[in-house]
Image (cartoon, helix red, strand yellow):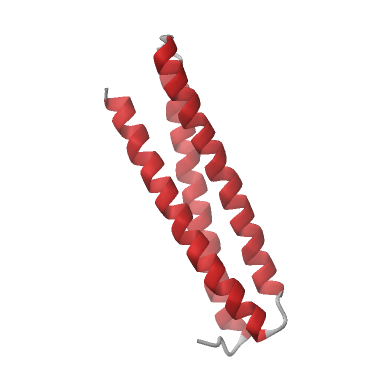
Length: 114
């Protein structure tokens, strides 16, 4: 599907940016929860798991940052063919980001309940 005007380009990129920002906001909340949890725990096994989650949250931040850069590159793409290729890659990567974050978030919530 070719996007025919600049407004459609901006609308789609704005939606992607909002999705990315929502994940980053939720990621911040999880990092804050982890910080609070760490204030009350000191068992080595739990610390290893906390480090695992911290690394996962950092990976989420990095992945989201790279994806945001891809969106900006897509906005600046001149050739329609380039835009179409980048659009497909962005959609796929956004799906992967959502999937990664949902899995990490669910796993973290289970960890907190234990």
